[in-house]
Image 1 (cartoon, one colour):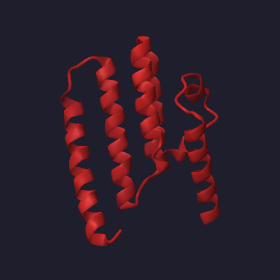
Image 2 (cartoon, one colour):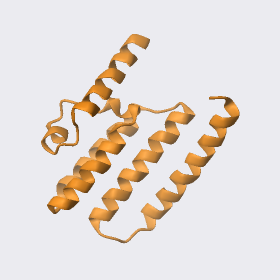
Image 3 (spheres, one colour):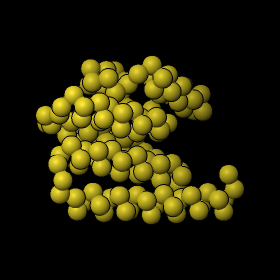
Image 4 (cartoon, one colour):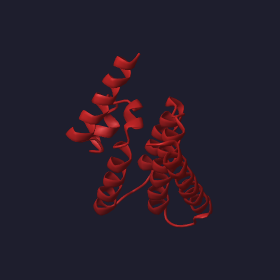
Length: 132
């Protein structure tokens, strides 16, 4: 991707992230809806950081901790759990989420990681090791 196109994408993702963040900060809906917005906000934050070239492990760890806390505190119906599961899988498909702790039973117990996501995370971890 050339710099002009990359800069245009970066600006677009910055705008999207800022709008989602602002909406999230001012949102007064249910906790379920707030959690879904948090996942969307996290998705765009990491995507923007990837385009900027400054994704760090701390952001991923913060995401993990916040998400686990929020999800554990909610009493969700079966349908809501399925919706959140799909949202989390969409977020975890970002290669930057390869920093997550795959051995954490939270992801497996709640079915947030399937074989496809597991393979992507392992492949990205291997790529990082090879690059070093």
